[in-house]
Amino acid sequence: MQVSILVVSRTPELLNRFCASLNQASGLHSLEMELLCSWNGSDAEEALIKNTSRYDLHIAQRVPYHFSGNINGLAAKATGDVLLIANDDLVLDEGCVDAGLALLNSNPEIGLVGGLLRDQHDLISHAGINFDLRCSSYHLLDRLLNSSQLSDIPSAPVAAVTGALQWIARQDFLNHPFNTAYQVCGEDVELCMDVQQQLKKQVWLCAEASAVHEAETTRRQDESQAGNSEDQILLRARVKTFIDQASKKQLKILLMQQQRESMHLRNCMADQTGQLEIQETLNIERKERAEQEKVLLDLREERIRLKQQLELAGGHQ
Image (cartoon, rainbow, N blue to C red; front, side, top):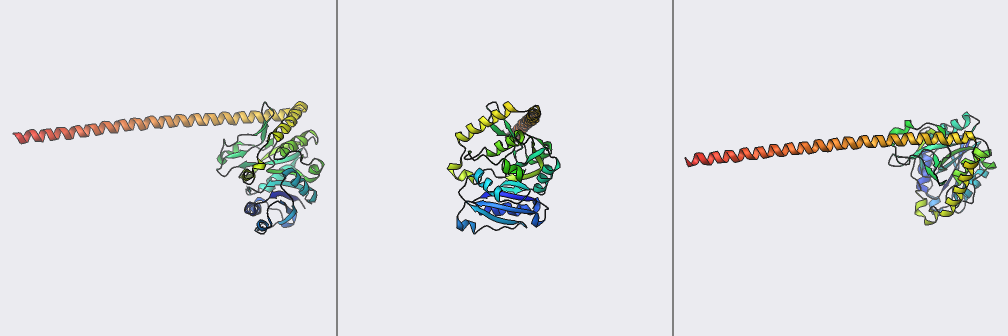
């Protein structure tokens, strides 16, 4: 078994759609990939699950929602050499699974791979994760580029990638599972730092492994799954430790990532400035055209008025 896909779900419509996208996302034989689900929905909703992919879907556990704990449980049951951790609200693009798998297997220095995600409005929602001055993590270029600009984003080492779509060797994950101290989010970013500092491997963004991600489609319906300060404090402390202990090579990756981000932001600003200049030019042209039309209208009215005066003068004679 090459790949075990691990997904947590309670929404049959999302899980069904995710399964349907697998057929175009991978060329692996049906016996080379399995899909393990941690189900936390109702029995009635579970009955609505319809797997239309060629890969076996197993409801491997039925436990309350806790993302890190649920995924850790699924990983222990998986048989694939590689784990693909995925959100159920993904729609995978053609070749997505194979691209991420190929990159992970291409170099022993690569320990974890993440996908390039866009939202339902065709805007890039995830192109890697960076850290700000407060050691808070954030998604690079979040909704600043559209899918037509995907070619501008390279496959390259990054500081971290989202757990919405990650490839990692099963043994590596079993040795360094998600930190279950996180209640809602943050375990995926910490795993990326563990891979770099404990496994001495790199984290890569794979630009060819793309998908549509309707972020927090399920989570936003549950107030208990909103971001919380405890997770933020825990993750900031881990990020600070990572940066303080980072090797020269890891710091270089951070620097290169920031340079790429700066370049994209400058290009975005230039594009916006250019668009504003174009819009301003169009506004000026519209204003001039309106003024010309007004002048022509005034001339037409003046000609009509003069004509009427001449007709009246002729009539009086």
